[in-house]
Amino acid sequence: MSPESWAILVLIAYVLAGFAVVAWQSLQSPDGWKVWVIHAITRFFTTMMCRQRIMQKCPFPSVGNGLVIANHRSPVDPFLLCSASQEKLDGHCVRRLDFMTAREYVEMGGVVGLVCGIMGCIPVERDGKDMGPAKTALRRLKEGKLVGIFPEGRINMGEGLLPANTGIAWLALRSKAPVFPAFIHDAPYGTTMVNSFLKRTKSYVTYGDAIDLTDYYDLKPTPAILDEVTELLMTHLGALGGVKPTPRVRPERTNGVATNPQLATVGAE
Image (tube, rainbow, N blue to C red; front, side, top):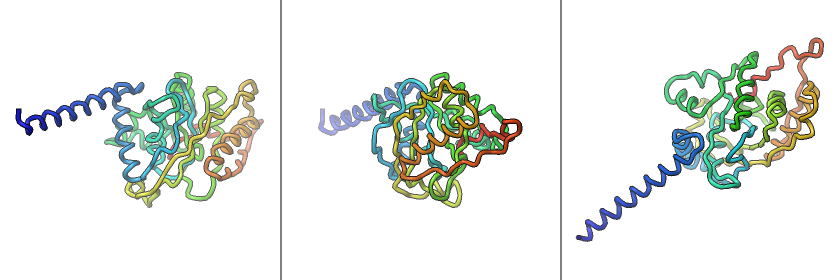
């Protein structure tokens, strides 16, 4: 056999081996090959456009539930969180992170709606009057899934952290799931959503260990307790980025009940 023929055979062998590795890794994803493919595309995008590097191993569990809270500076934030989360403390594992997302994106047609569907996004009404999304998130946590929330409720263009909604405390206490803070640094932001994805940055994510809330599990989730737990969670999140959360202003109450608790408005914009 000629050297040229040997070279072609070796090249074919390398290509087949590459396909085999990709197929094997995609089948290892506990949430299916489609999630793995989206993760691979996301990882390529954030590496090229955001120059994102994995700075540490991710503390999210490979098996079991978890509530992930993060700051929100850009429409690219969910991509940055997901693409750096596969290198976990107990090994390589690509898991789906079910984000609470504005309903118009989840129900949008085309690529956006398709990706939201595959990634299990939970649609959220912006007015926050529907408890359905919070209950859906709670159910998924009890099913052993990872749920992602941007507790600021919208993109924050100012300093520090915006006041968080007590929905994160409600979910954490009702589910008793471990809460993992993640601070996103230098995420790209443009004048439009499209511009945000076209802007080059140098972004990275700092992950924190699970926040211990066991002292609160046996307490009645009163408004005061929810405020206290929310402040605790946001303090841990802010510490990862060297910022302090903005204190919450407690909503007006009638007979001890909030007039608009807005438990559903804890998702991504």
